[in-house]
Image (tube, rainbow, N blue to C red; front, side):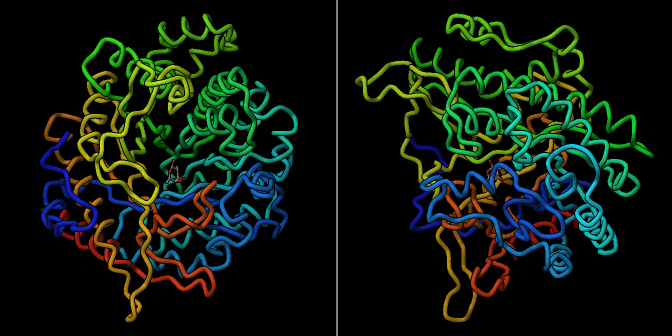
Length: 474
Ligand code: FCB
């Protein structure tokens, strides 16, 4: 398959320079990170272990045996990092709170030294004219809550709501933008089914229970945030909606793509927006003897009005419902067997993820059409490439720059097609701890030398800054 967007990674074209001018002046431009991936200071000032501290110590779980003990040392370098963010000219910085730093063990009293870090971060961002956008949960569950059952246990949803209230009580006088969860699919499926992410459990039924309790936690936390907010806030959730397409136009492949869409997207969006789980997914689960642990009233808690929906997008997946041979049948992105991912031959990033900007247009327009009336924000988009500083210390990451240019064009195309997309966050501000890939994969628009912690803005970072300037010129 070829499209006009095809390109070989060896000869990336000059990125278009006018993408920014296709956005209104009030479009929100930002950069994103998450706590465990950048903060380090893993056991300082009263922070206790999260599931990622534990999981990264399991032999073989993380590439190179890496962990987040030091990461980008952002905990100690926060003031300079905020200056760096401000220098990029962004409107907003999306970061997450470390739950075990703020509430060690996941219950009980607030750790004053832990929350003080976020107080300082928020103050500094505001001083520099950057809007803080808080994610409450980006995967670092306090280990004690995992020991008590983790997300497959209903109580974790209630603990999360308590944590949300703590955060609001302390930061709500200055933070207006709140995301409850980042990518519950990853927490549930990678954490409890495939075991590729912390806590590394492998039980399909548990992963589906985790889906429900994550969504319940989102609903309970949303209620508590709104009750405790001293002034009007914007609350939403960020999903990595699976853009699932049929590999060919056969019934089997269309059914496979629909199944992948059910388990990757609709199992989240339907209860969140429509207040019910999709029937085809529920039926398939029943056939497999799995029942979502829904209690009376849960769905109305989950379906709290959303002020926005955050969309994280990296690639699209093509599915086949036909096995090539028995060994090709595997549990894939939807966590469901008998659905096979079929690579299409597009150029790939260092993650081996195919570069499919048209899929971002498709996903945004689809969400806008199927769930109308909810403003959309691209809360993550970006690419890993193996880039290193050259002899002059510059990082000429033309491939990443091209990736951003093409995907920002794709967002503009979605807006042209009627999708209400109001912002875009580049993933990521810094090279950082890329979960089970450790420090091997670099997503930053700023290079980090992990030996010296030196930050160097890459070509893509400069392009992003210039792109924002162009958009401000209208
Ligand atoms: C997303 C995660 C983010 C980062 C990017 C590459 O799934 O939210 O933390 O790992 O992928």
